[in-house]
Amino acid sequence: MQIEGFERRTVDTEGAAIHLEHGGEGPPLLLLHGYPQTHLIWHRVAPHLAQHFHVICPDLRGYGDSAKPPGGTDHAAYSKRAMAQDMADVIDAFGYTSCLVAGHDRGARVAHRMALDKPALVERLCVMDIAPTLYMFAHTDQQFATGYYHWFFLIQPDGLPEHLIGADPGYYLREKLRRWAAPGAVFDPAAVEDYVRCFSSPAAIHASCEDYRAAATIDLQHDTADRGRRIGCPLLALWGARGFVNRTYDVPGVWRDYADNVSGRALDCGHFLPEEAPDAVCEALEAFFGSGV
Image (cartoon, rainbow, N blue to C red; front, side, top):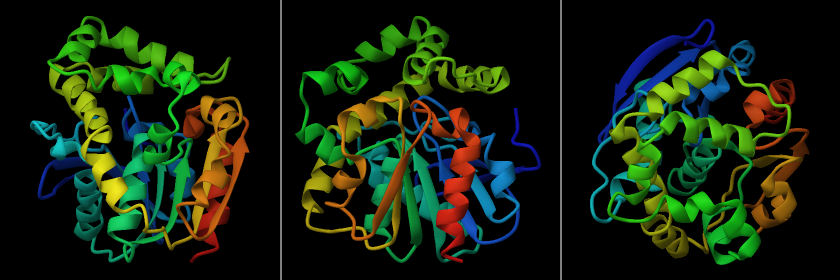
């Protein structure tokens, strides 16, 4: 499957070969996907946004058709710092010195790190359906551990989650979509098939586990060291009104402790905003990013 009207490209960064699709003309807009998906999560919004922006939709390292380097004992290859550097290299490969960024799920965590490490690169930032990683771990309780059990399952060592997921990766992925979406959500079958294709290899399953292992180790070290730093660019938080994040957090209130200029609202959907509520996502992003160009 390919995003309508978009072209494919591979960018060799310092740490990984990043597969992406891009299209449109205008200010550069980087869209970052989450777990357990690929850049195709944007297939219902990217063509519309491409009427106003040069939309760039990469597969994060470890996901989709991007490279899946070994994680290493310290999981540094999947730190959000390393993944953010990939995205900085992608933007540089297109000849841009700054961009607009929207991230969903894991992609929002990469985008958060980009805004901290590369403040001159990120003009405006939208994070979808997350609270900061450090905050979520620091406020872990039974409700969080139950709703986000995968955070604690995927970090288990010695190949345990890889072995269990690998027994039936298609079932696992489809259940994630079903359980995290609002009841009645409809996903494009072609997109789901591509998610399953990309997720099913042992290398992809291991890489996604490494992403979460990094989040619970080296990312927390980086986030703790940077706790006094704040995001200076305007930040828009969007989240699903029928999802876990809405039930658990005061989303804009939490982000105001991490960023100077925060706005946000809930959309009528579950976790997968770009697929469940594409019209509302387009409207929100155009209003937010359009006011900055």
